[in-house]
Figure 1 (tube, rainbow, N blue to C red):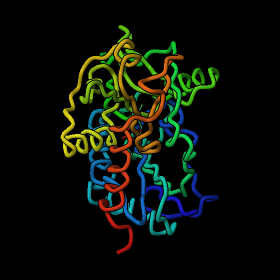
Figure 2 (figure 1 turned 135 degrees about the vertical axis):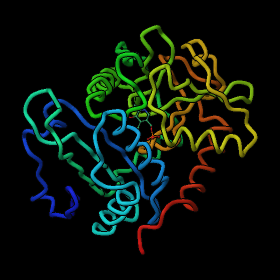
Figure 3 (figure 1 turned 45 degrees about the vertical axis):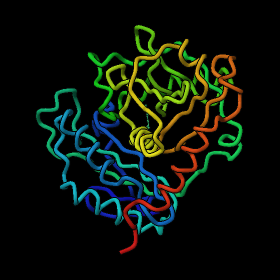
Length: 290
Ligand SMILES: Cc1ncc(COP(=O)(O)O)c(C=O)c1O
């Protein structure tokens, strides 16, 4: 595997960052997870823009331009003969011991283009089970949820461990005042009487790129869609429920905290959205080959 580090492509064994990197020491940085389908990168520019917005908030100067980053991602994908895969872009503040960032001037930019570990087909056909975890999402006043920051993910990892302990496919996280926020690595949607709802960003969620795609597809299918504060009552009483994320795509959730959602099988609108999403990723995207 060829890894991109600060402008160079190097073999995996030589791809090393400093033990003083602020990303390693403090989780001081941001990242993106991106998918390639059939030789095309899905929503490449949206991911590049989100990384730049994260960097802007963290006051980390991205060492390349937006076009330069898109090109670096494509170059890394090409160097690894990627057609279908998962691309991880990591940006950290750079190298320096101690919390104070004022003398850290050279950010670290790493791009990994890996072959895909597909989720089991069964998960899409039968849907997955969610459990509400005890751990809450950090309030937006404490940690801006729209930054896809490295450090924030320790919370999501702990939440995932809770879900694993319960033997569930995913953990559902609430805000500190008990509203439904998101799953540990995915956004959540429900369908009620033909209308689609998802929590707004200020509850403490990442504004997912797959979430935006699902909302776009719903509008195309003339399914009314809106952001709304949701409680567990809304989830338990929904006709259908699904999660969205770069890795998981659109995946039905059929059981939440022991309650069957709707019929307990992936619902008809969820299935239509899944089919439309597959069509979208096949036709859209920035070609990897020149
Ligand atoms: C906490 C969290 N929420 C939501 C998502 C879904 O976002 P996206 O669709 O951009 O992958 C992710 C995945 O990256 C995530 O980590």
